Length: 139
Image 1: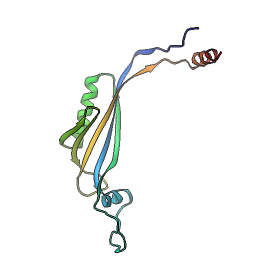
Image 2: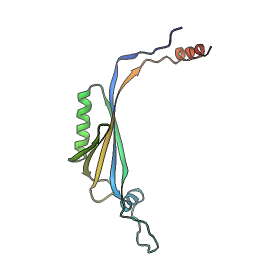
Image 3: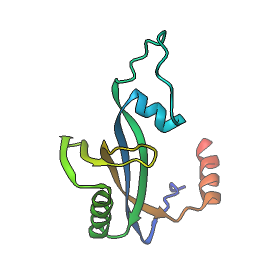
Image 4: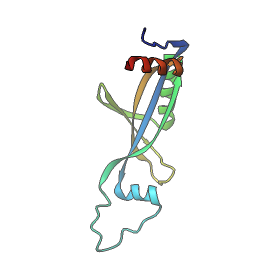
């Protein structure tokens, strides 16, 4: 028996991008963003509220059939965030930096975005054929 081999649908290929965003915040800004105004005046509290760290800021994803349209969509998205300051990183981990406001904070903060791009295909898949093949393969 031949191995069940599903085929890609005609014009079923597409490019997909997921853009992840992070914000450089102090611990106090992070708490304020997550829980609203906080009180940091307790003399017994030794928490470093000024310590800075990258925190998750959200993500967006979209897909296009054509590469040029995907690139245009990425450019539009990054341009809507604010002027890009710099890009850094290695081949497989590139960051784009910009200043932008967060709707829960008063002042703009430094953000960075990185993306994952894939080229996917839609497959015509018959689960019944696949299941019967798996049962026969077990023998």
